Each structure stands twice: as structure tokens, then as C-alpha cells.
Length: 484
Image (tube, rainbow, N blue to C red; front, top):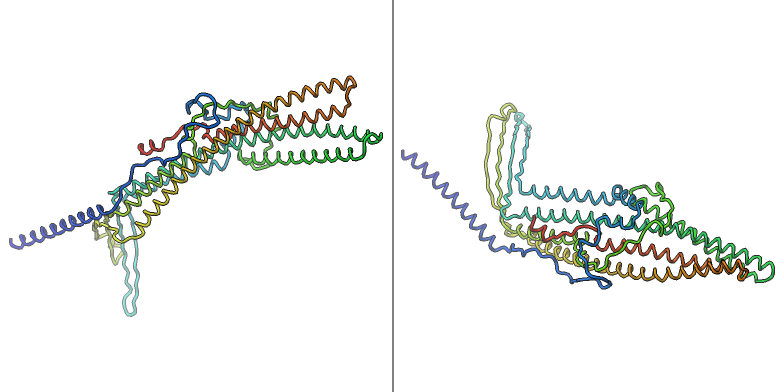
């Protein structure tokens, strides 16, 4: 009876001692945790200079939702352009790369979540040994181990939140790439059509100058003008021919660029000839565009999500300073004969607390993440400032080129009247054929300038849509923070 009481007392003292150790360790953990600064302020969007409206604006302000449609390029009313953009969206490889990065970021969320789950290892081994003058020995073993690092402070969850922010930033990168692709296809398409019109007008100008040369050559043979007039006109034809060759070269290069944009090998697709002013209409740009449109610009959205990611990584690095609690369970068996391997087992359970008392790398990592967070905030501010500049420049270009268009249209209209009157005077014998050709040449040059202006307004409008973030809906990063 006394032996039983003695055994019970020993078990009681062992349990009490173990409990005291656990309590002491817990108190130690809490004490150390209280000494470590892991506080994080609430997330707040980095401050940037405020801008209520654009400087070059007319008309009453309109809402962001009433400005630009998602498929804004259809405002040009060109079905062929719509077809090219559809091909580019389906076939462009840069867009596919960005889409693949979204998948990578999505799978990395699962990888981050796995840090809070237990891990299990299973191993089998054999040991064969022969010593001189000793018999050959062999031993077989089978063992498994389960380890679980308990995320009591939420360090893993912070990493998950950071990866979710990167996922959203990757989505915004795809939107920015999508917008860049559509803008490049439209601008390249307009440029090719402009080259077609310029080539046609250049050929007309060249033909007119050849007719002028024929007149000069006849006058030289009759002794009415010196040889220098003929040579000067021949040099002019050389200049115009060189320009025509350069236009054809530029057209071919732009066509190659369009091939790459739509996902076709360069040279395998040739865009049919067309006329820019006949095919593409100038879309109206709404007045009173609000500065809040920049909130939906994809690169600005991506930059802010990366600020949020850096914020979560700072929190994760701070939490890494706290003690970690691990639970480890192991079981195994060993035998000198393979047939006896499963006859006996050894197993155990070991909770442990790891306290990073002297780990300079942990605290250094906190400073690194804080510095990286500052970089992300400044990059966000830089993206916003760049967006302000691009929108302002686009608005200035659109409005200025539209004002120039009025003057160019009046110039072409008046030169056309002059050309018609000169043609009537030619029939009456009042003027020479040379004067008619000179008037036509002047008219063609003015028409070339009007054509270039039309293409500039189209490209400026595309750049304005791009600068404003296209037709994407706005994304509130702070709302995303609350949701996740």
C-alpha cells in the first residue's frame, strides 16, 4: 500500500513540475512579447497632391461613370479597327504573359496559406555494417514525424494578406497591359492609314512636279528660261521621290509592328490600303472630365496594392520577433530483421517554444521591409504625378490640334477655291498651265497637313483615354483591405 502511495506521489510531483515549467514558459513568452514592438497603424492610402479638375477644361463637371465606356475604341466607328483589337486581345503574347503572372500570384496565395498547416514526413532506411572479425550486421527502421508551427500571432495570415495584395496588383498590371495594347493597336492602325493617304498624295504631288518639269524643259529648249530652272525642278522631283520611298518604308515597318501586336509573325499579315479621314471618325471628348478618373487608372491601382503588400510584409516581419510555438509528434520502429520491423513501435510528443532572443537577422528584416514600404509609397506618389502630367498633356494636345484643324480646314477650303478659279482662267487662256500646277502643288501640301492633323487628334484621343485609365471601373484599395 505504501508503495502505491509513493508511486502516486511521484506521478503527482512530476505532473506539478511539468505544469510549473509550462506556466513559467508561458509567463516568459508573454513577458518577452510585451517587450517587442509589433504595433501597426491602420492602413491609409499614401498622401498625394490634391487635384480637383484639369486646367484645360471647358463645360460643367461630369461624373466619372458618365465619361468613358469600357470599349471606348468603338467611338471611332471603324469595324476593321474593332476586328484588329479583338485579334490583338486574343493573340498578343505580352497580354498572355501578364495573364500567366496573375495565375502565379494566385497560386502563391495557397503557398502562403500552407505555412499555417502541419507538415508530415515519412522515412524508411536500412543500415548495413561489417567490422573486421565481427559478424555482418543489418538494421531496418521506419519513422514518421508531424510538425505544426502554430500561428498564434497571425504572422502567416499577414503573409497571406500581402500575397493577396500582390494578386490584385497583378490583375491591375494585366489591365494596364490591356489598355496599352489597345492604345498601341489603334495608334499604329491610324498611322498606317495616314501613310496610305500620304503615299497617294505624294504620288499626285510627284506627278504634278513632273508635269511642271516638262513645261520647264520646253521653255528651256525655246530659250525662255535658263538650264538652272530645269535642274532645280529635277532636284525637287528627286526630293519628292526620296520622301515617297521613305513613306513606303515607314508603312512597312508600322505594318510589322501591327503584326506583332495582334500575335502574327511580322510579314505574315498586310493591312489593306485605306483612307484615314474616310474610315475613322473623330470621337467627341466629354468636357468637364473629373480628376477622380485617375482612381481607376490600372498602373495607379497596381502601385497602391503594392503599398498595401509592403504594409502587410512589415507587419509579418514585426510578428517574426515574437516567440513561436511548435508541436512535434514522432513515431517509428527499428529491427534487425525486416520481418520484425512492424512488431514494436516508439512514439513521442514534444511541444516547444522558440524565443528569438539574439537574432539580428529578424530585426534587420523589419528595417528592410520598412524601407521597402517607403519605396512602394514613393512609387505610388510618382505614378500619380505621372498620371497627372499625361492627362494634362493629352488634353492640351487634343484641344490645340482641334484649334489647328479649324485653321487648316479654312486654308484647304480657300486654296481649293483658288485652284478652281485658276482652272477656269486656264480655259479662258488667262493663265498658263504652269500656274495651275503650282496652285495644285500648294493645295496638296495643305491637304497633307490637314491629314496629319487628323491623325494627331486621333492619336491624342487614344492617349487621353489611356492616360485616364480607359473604361475600367474604379477600385478602392481600402475597401479591399476591409473585405479581406
